[in-house]
Length: 85
Image (cartoon, rainbow, N blue to C red; front, side, top):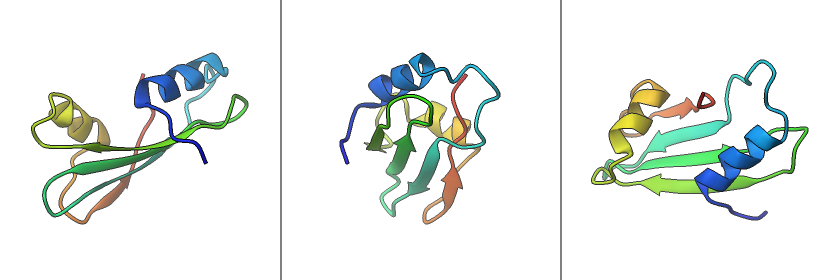
């Protein structure tokens, strides 16, 4: 398994023809006891297979937007990650 950055993963997903109805989930998110959000993301067929795991700390400027995109998240909770528009 090869880990790639979130930006590259999203680029691969768009370039691979993810122009049809978006999938219900592109991965999973959960929150660690210290508030860090872990994103386990994957690309979907028909494009190249890519997967990454990213940790977003509460001090990260993207933190609030990611948490809102997931629909809220609490410590220990696991949620699917909807595709970004």
